[in-house]
Image 1 (cartoon, rainbow over the protein chains, first blue to last red):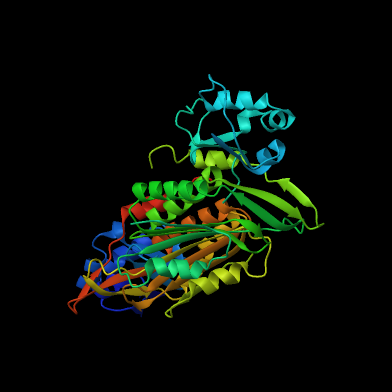
Image 2 (image 1 turned 45 degrees about the vertical axis):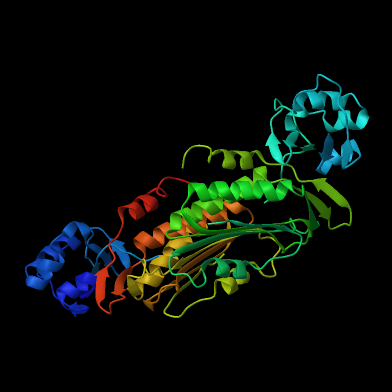
Length: 83
Length: 83
Length: 154
Length: 154
């Protein structure tokens, strides 16, 4: 599974993208976040306030309870500030 | 007092403007309309549906009960359709 | 901020008007605009003729523009309304509003258009494709309703 | 009606985009537009840097543009959003909508701007006039509120 990060989530994680193989039992966006937070200080910092982190699965906005089934690319980013 | 007419009010009255000296007792826009209606068929036709006729006194929208005191130019016209 | 109001028979250039509002400035974050155009109503019309009340048209549009400038923190406002014979595809009216943020510019533009429709002394008459003079365009109750919603504090 | 959506680093020409919507047509009575510009925040900023999510930005803006085209009877819709380094006074975003009557064009423009603010994957970072890299711009709750009002049927 490809993960991509944007804006200050990218800066805190310390990379723009990576490929991961989450362990069995990681079935939703929220479970993926919980697993990522256990992977190091940068991740813990990036996801410390989970409420503000937005996610997308294959370019479509996804809620924390969204299933990762079939997901190729999962993105994490702060609230959008375009426009 | 100068009267000016626009759009189909002008066409029905048969002129774009005129000067009138209303008799004593004509103190409001509504009273002026009632007097004008007595002046001939064109006026009666123009003002037959008083509810839809709009008026302005010296370039400012005026309601039927508006006073003519000090008025130099009174305008009558249909509902506006600009924009 | 002094609104720019022009009542004229000539065409206008929306791009030039919008550029004039924002050019050389770094405090403007939003320029909203509206251009009204003459339609041919599926080929039925050859033109619209716009009659106006000279003097009052300028005064009333300026009054409504001033009201918009009081209601919203605008950094620029331009209103142009044409009169005379206008062919399908030609421009009739422009409203362009500038502000720091998007909401005042968009709201002021909508407010101006609603008020121009119902308060500015202009009357449209149809010229038919057959060469005949058509009817005066009837005012729409929907336009009155649109304007009345601004009466409440915004 | 196919909305035109472009995500690009280059500047754009609002006049050309608006002309392209209406030129040669006689069924369009209204063109509404919104241009968002970079402010210098009273001299504090030298630029805004816009990061975006390539692929999703195009997809999400196209999705919202398509939603607008379903909600309102539009005859044309163009949305352009820039990314990269943008200086004060430069354009960031354009929405332009055409329709027969004014209300759909104005409403769709406002809808697009509200949704672009809260759903399009762009993030602004300040570059300070001092030469330092500034903070990421924080999202505003007011923007979420503005977008949420469209959730009700319109």
